[in-house]
Amino acid sequence: MIILAATPIGNLGDASRRLIEVLGNAEIVVAEDTRTTQRLLQALKIENRPRLIALHDHNEKHKAAELAELAEQHDIVVVSDAGMPAVSDPGYGLVAAAVERGVTVTAIPGPSAVLMALAISGLPTDRFTFEGFLPRKPGERRSVLTALASERRTMVFFESPSRLASSLADMGAVFGDARRIAVCRELTKLYEEVRRGTAAELVAWAEQGVKGEIVVVVEGAAPVTISAADALAQVQALVASGIRLKDACAEVAAATGLSSRDLYGAALAARSA
Image 1: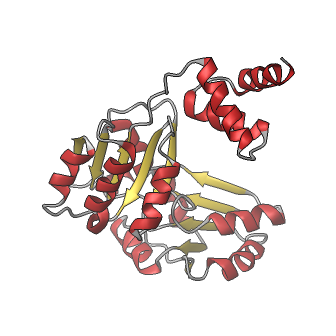
Image 2: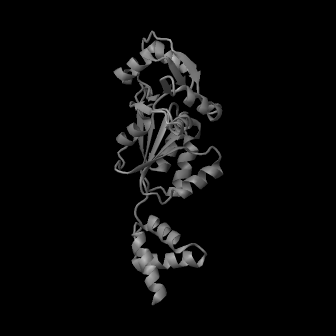
Image 3: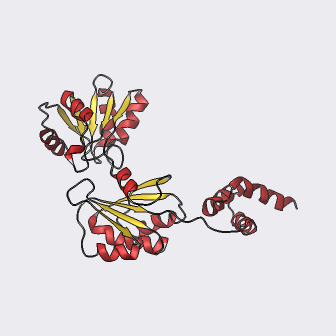
C-alpha cells in the first residue's frame, strides 16, 4: 500500500494524530528530502526510525516502478517537505506506477498551502484552478499567463520570493490592473502575512524585498459581455481561418460564457440559410 501523508507547511501543531501514529509505526518512509523528514520525526518526538528512501524530481522517473513493486509487499508512507505529496511535489509518478500495478493508494489529509491561501484570499472559492509555479523565463511566463487570460476561475500559483515582483508585473500586463490579487506569505508560520490589491500595488510592495514561502491567488476573468450575433461572427471568423466548427464554438464559448451548443446550432442554421 502507498500512503500519501500530508505534513505541516510551517506550524508543527498542524501535524495530525493520525500522521504521528502512522509515522510512529512506519517501516518504510519515502521522502522528498530524508534530512527534512528526519528533523520532522525528531520535532514530533517520534522514536521510530523507519527506513528512509529519497524520492525527488531527479530520481522519481526511474525509482517509481521499483517503489511501486516494493509497495506490493510493504506499506510505504510517502511524505514531501511540506504539505501533500504529489501536489507540486514528488509523488505523482509513484502514484501512477502504483495504480498501474493495482497497488492500493490512500492518503492522510492535512495542511495545504493551496487551500489555505484560497480560503483566506477573499476571492471566489466556488471554482478554482491550481497552476503551480510559473516558468522562470519571462517569455515563457508571459505565454502561460496569456493562455490563462480568459480563465474565469480563481487561479492559485506558487512563486519564489526572488521572482514575485516580476511575476506580478507580468500578471498586471497580461490580465490588466483591475484584477484582484492576494499574495499569501509564510502561511501558518510566525510571520504569516496576506497582502491584497492590484498587480501594480503589489509590485510596489514586492520590489522592496519579500522572504518566505509564497502563494499568489488571482481573481478570474470577468465574463465577456457580447451579443449572440457578435459571438456567431467570431465563430465564423475562426472557421474561415481553418479551425473546426466544434473547436471554434468551444473557444468562443470559453471566452464569452455563452453555450457552445447554442453557438454550434446557430452556426449550422446560418450555413443553411
